[in-house]
Image 1 (cartoon, one colour):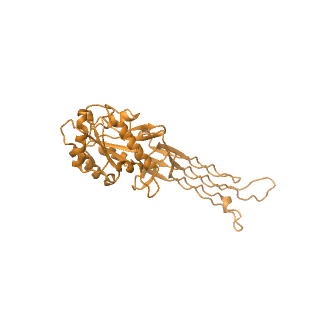
Image 2 (spheres, rainbow, N blue to C red; image 1 turned 135 degrees about the vertical axis):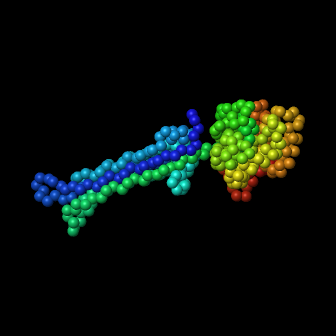
Length: 353
């Protein structure tokens, strides 16, 4: 299925039914009174978050949605039937914005979340409701009000505990493939990944987290170069970012410069991304003898001056991935269940030892 993370739709709530003007006409009742009923309310339009969906591709073809209008009132004080509400299912993680004003309407970040995006019109009043002691035979009624009509912009941001960022061919897809159940395309040329992939990493019974692989970044990505800039929004929800860089770049590039490039692109796109936890993962360690890997990685970290957790892995050989998965799992569990104030976190205690 094609991955689509943006869509524009138009929604129209149902109009309210008109009120009725009617008078009783019954045998043996010489003076029948007004008995026109009210109109029914129009149906409203809701968006419903559904975890069974993972793309907005359905909205590339169906872009106009209209709820049922309310029926008009009738004689004998019969109220018109209200229109049925319309529910539109969207993927969990969809952000809804008013296209004409840019106002954010809601964020459907939880499965089953329901968001009202267009209110149905109110039904009109029949002449029976205008009856009073001074107006015994009212002949007025009101029309139903029109339902709301809106142009909406839908933007999907995937929900992942961990976001992977790195240059093309940094080994992101291979790492996701080896650690999770995801099957992104892996090849030895740049931009193999064309859209985000999610993988569930299981580290034990009922212990797992979701990892997101996005297309590789290149210098100038924040200004539109390459593909990664378009998908950076998908890691904005992730509480942890993993910077992936080759321990020995195949093109002879300086690993420190590579990491600095990633930092600059994140900052240009959204400075807030640099404020969240970011770990460093040196990939493709199997290209160096085992005795040299640790020493080279330590030297690069010192040159970077990063005081963050770092790891050396070879996803292809399965080396270092278990240690990385366990550390990430501890961090995610800490995020999901924050410790009481004043208490140290398991990860902090481990680093101090």
